[in-house]
Amino acid sequence: MEKCRIVWLDNVKAFGIFLVVFAHFISSSSYFDIDKLIYGFHMPLFFFLSGYLSKYRIKHYTFSLFVKTKFLSLVKPYVIYSILGFSFYCLFTILKESNPFSLQAIFEIITAKCRDLYKFYTVPLWFLICLFIVEVHFYFLSKLKRVYEPVIVVILCCLTIFIFADEVLPFNLNIAWLVMPFYLLGNRYEELKNKVTISSKYKNILWVALAVAYIYIVKRNSFVDLSFLQWGNTTLYYVGSTLGIILSVEFFKKYHTNIKIFVQMGVWSLYILCLHWFFVAPFRKFAYHNESISKLGYFVFGTVMSIFAVLLIMGFLHLRQQLKYKRNKR
Image (cartoon, rainbow, N blue to C red):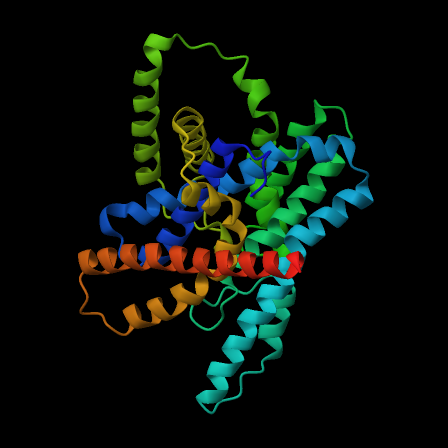
């Protein structure tokens, strides 16, 4: 593990990626709308964190170096895990004695539009291409005067909200425009935070009030799923997501932990994102064909499976890391 990592950031990423896995496992249960509360902010949180971490690279990297870095960290994993996921799909389809090869499916994977929840194992990978598009957009925006950045971000958001809201565009372009405010917020968060002064005796009351406000707003809004361009009421979506992000970030800034497994979960969050659907897809198929399972039973089973999936993926990654270390030592 890298020595220069920021512990609270890894804590937030660990929290966020577990919510992603957890929400995907329990999303059919709707138990107390917990999935709705998670979907209300969990993906905007990752765009925010990417913006928060982008300041150095955007400022000091040339465009070619910046794109190369992001290509290797985002597009390369997308290609690798898309091939892996589609290979699994083809294998299982052939075993069922049917033809797995569909030009439409291949086109959807190439353009990062694949959303078939039960057939493919590539569903969560849309985030990687979407983030790559956001990063490249923002690199160009950062070269303009700072006052123009929020203006152009709002214009791009409006393009999605008012013109391109019906269907996901190739490479998730309109989703990228929709989430750019969170990336911008992350990029300027410390600067904006320093302009706000809150008396220490009111802070706890404020955090409770913000948490209550978040729950109320998310409950009022319809179900949010960015991968399908579902965000409900625009005002409720942006306000609710922003509250969820701020609450998560400030909580872990104050109460971060050095527990190795939790920190490592944040370090490996991208791999967990890419691999967890191999567990979610069969679980959802099982739940889909067993309608007799109660919401509580589905929720409990989904919770156990979430923990199991994360620990198994981390165990595999740890083993791979140890084998790589031994190879390099020879």
